[in-house]
Structure formats: C-alpha cells, structure tokens
Length: 276
Image 1 (cartoon, rainbow, N blue to C red):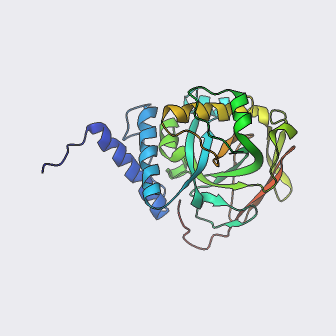
Image 2: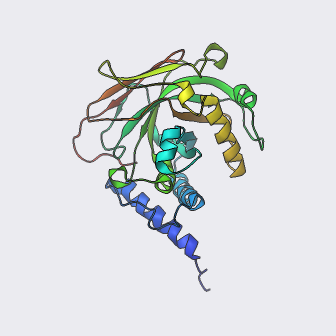
Image 3: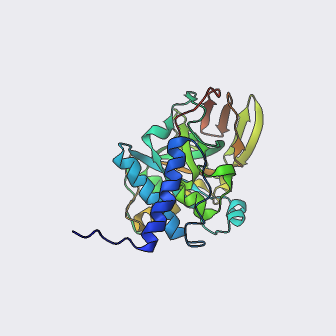
C-alpha cells in the first residue's frame, strides 16, 4: 500500500512540533520555530500546539484545564497581536501549594500570579456571557503559574509561544476556595513576593479588564475549536502583573486580596531535572 503523501503544511507543523518536543525531552532549549512556519500564521502555531497536546495525551497525561496568556495589552503589542492565547494544563504540571518544584522541571522558568477558576459546569455555548462563567464556576483560588520556554533565551514571537503551549510550564493553586460572590476580582490587588520583598504587583483589572473576561474569551475560543471547557477544569485566567524571573532555591508567595495566598518553591540546581 502506498503511503499517504504529507502536505507541506503538515510537514512544517510536524517539524516544529518535533523541535519543541525534543527540547522538552532533553532539557536543552531549542531555536525558535517561526522559521519553520508561515510568517505570522497563528493557526499553524495552534496546529503545532494541538499535535504536541495529542502526544502528551497518548503518553498517558491528562488535561486538567487551560491557561490564558497574552492578557496584557503591553505584551500583546510587544508580540504584535491583538488577542490573548491559550494552552493546555496537564496533571503532571500541577504542583501542591508550597511543594518543591525540582529545578530543571521547567525550562527557563519565570513566575506570575493569577486568579484560577475551577468549574462545576460545562461551558459549551457558541457565545458565552460573564453570567454564564459565574454560574459555571464552583470557586476561585490564588495561583502561581510557572511559565517556561522550550525556546532558547525566550526569543519568542506570538507564533513561537502559541506553538510552545503558550509557554506553559507548571502551576500551583492555593487551597482555600472562595466563592465568586465573596470577592471582587476586578479590584483585587496582587503582590508576588520573594523573601517578603515584592517582585511584581498588580490587580485583576490588568487581566483584560477583569479575569472573568479572560474566561469568557477562552470558553468561546475552545468551543469553536471543538474542545469546550468541562466541569472540573481549572482555568488560569492570566497574569495580574509582570512575570518575574526565578532562581534555584527561590520561594515565591503570591497574595491576592480576597483570595489569600499561595507559594511556589523551587529546588536547588543539582543536575538535570525532569524537563517539561
């Protein structure tokens, strides 16, 4: 039987996916993938992300939710886009509050504080409202997202970060659930501290004007792509302030008004980690 001929588009998507996957497996950052994909083609970048996601699922991983990125207008301008992006969260990237994340588990890690929503209902409408998201949300938690780039020196464009699962690395959730009726997420102030010293500050309004707006965007986008948000999913709604670089041995604590605090602890550099 003759083998199916791969289209040029499939070939470049697979080449980009292989470059990023090799970096994840080996722990050695790679060159950007934008040279392999059509210039500025976000659909091609998402095709790479989807292929890598399917590989993770085939390998036994489980999707635990989704993250929204590029929620800051300044970062969007920097990367030449006018829309957020998204990536998948996996079971092996969830880290308990205060537990040590081995150094090397996330390549070139940085941290940002976010509001996490945990859903108790599916969000499968073609177009969602804020009320739909509120109704579907069981509770909110403070979160630290450890972003990481498989691409050397964070030399990224929007195409690169989307292909690289929106630069997702790991995430840490707080443990005290808060009902949405008990917190004003728009005005909630955030401070991310290292040894008691603030390294990033912000508020809910910095995330697309309100973290729930980011969740609405994600819900609509995933429905269009045939992967709607489901009950039990965790949604990281986007950074409330600038991301900060981290070093081996760091312990960062994020405090979000009305939600409490959460800690991300990083191990010492003792050799090769478990690249993600």
